[in-house]
Every structure is written in C-alpha cells, then in structure tokens.
Image (cartoon, rainbow, N blue to C red):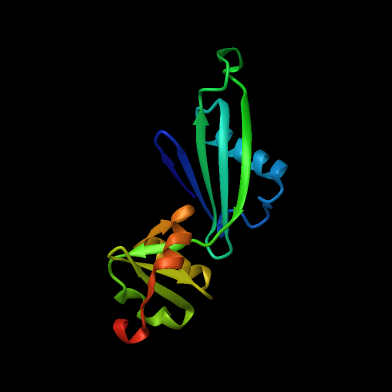
Length: 159
C-alpha cells in the first residue's frame, strides 16, 4: 500500500492488500476507508469526495478530495463520504520500454505525447510488480485519451 498526501490524498492498494474487499459495495468501501483512516491516524474530517478506480490487474486506487466549502464547522469531527466506483484500466508510463521486451506478448504499448504507456493484457502479480517499480501508474480520465489517441508500438521497435 502506498499513500500520497497533498491537497488531496491518493491510496494505492494492490490486489495483494485487498483480496477479500468488494469495493463495488459502497458500504464495504466506506468501512475499509474508515479503517485505513483509523489505522494510519490520517486527519480527515468533513465532506470527502471519493473516487475508487478498480483495475483487474493492479487493484484499486482511491482518490480522496476534501471539500471544505459545504461542511459547517459544527460537524468538524464527522466524516461524510460521497463515493463513486469506477471500473477502469490502469496504464504504466515509462520512457524506457526495453525492460519490458520479455513481456511484449502479454501487453500493449502505446506512444502518446512523447512517452510510452503499457497496457497489461495478461500479466501475473509479479510482472505487475515489475511495472509498478519501473513505471508511473496512470489512472483516471487521461487513460481514455491515451487509449483513443495513442499510437501502438510494434514488437520490432522494442526487440
């Protein structure tokens, strides 16, 4: 599990961490998020706009945006969650595609905006781990742009 803090918070949960959690059930998703907040003592309160991106290869990315504008200070210790669950495809951004030459028959490689994006088609958890170590995980709205406008890279270019 990885947590990125900033104005917003992003939780990266690989399949290894969430084997028995059904994030499509909003009540279970809310329970899981509350448990993470409690265990890691994350200071969150108020209204949270939460997007849960689910990818069958990687797992789940939970994007939490705190919305201060609509919540009264009186309820400062309470948490209200608006949860949206999105079935998604995650891509892996890299500038060096040569490390994946052995995986080429199990992935699709797209070139977009001067970078390469890897789309898994059939990979093991170990191979996904290798991508996570060597690439940036891409999720959200940008993925559909890349899939639509990216140019497919042929195996001959890599080998």
